[in-house]
Length: 362
Image (cartoon, rainbow, N blue to C red; front, side):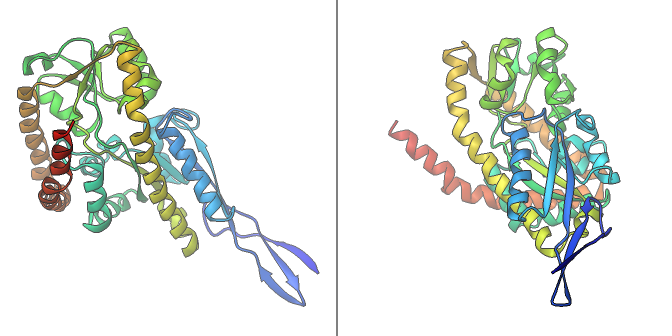
């Protein structure tokens, strides 16, 4: 048996393939790919950073080692908020982040992550996979030479950490808060000052007083960041992010260079990572909340109804303004809101009704 190397250069990240000569006939080995993934999260940060690691490992295992991915945390290879451009240009093959970070590229991108007072994780997944949402997302990202895939969801978040009490809408005026996406614009219209910053900068900014408040995700991640050391008022519910979709985005030429079976593997691995993320949050948030309250004396408080009503009204205004000035945003939101109205009808007689019934016996 004779062996020779055959070099290929079909796509970004492809490495040498081999073929074997058996009985005078060449049997071509399947090509292998080595990719880099840049993330917007601190290296190995619980759930978000580790989900990127999980995704890379899953793709490697499902592909039998034909795709190997090295994961880089924020600032290891590129700054957190430059991941989108790095993948778009083809500097690296894959990124892991959240669509609302790219509102500077397209305001519509925010609709694929979280809309204030919008759909929950379960509802938004229904829209993405069975309501046309994913096709619209792909249409948008195609402008940037990217292929997007949903890769996780936080579920309903907390409203955030505040250095002072929030008793009325007036308490939001002058408030400097780390809050990205559409929620940040809503806060601005309520009189506050939204600040967008990577997760790795939040604790020091809150501790130093550079910001007065911050939202991050929920108890498990917030505990890991030590945010309770900088503020003790922990408010709910997460009106701004009721079911935040996280994403993987792949350079379009890189993705299309893959054989069809590997393209399918990448897509299905992202779905698997999505289930893993929401399951981990569901498993760990409650224990973390218990630790925050009973060990670190955090005060867990509900935002007043009048504050939530005002934020809801402003949220509708913010979304409508985006829709009015951009035709594609109008197309996406028409699809989203139509699906949400149907989802609400079902949720009212299923999830909501059951939660109420369960509470009657508590």
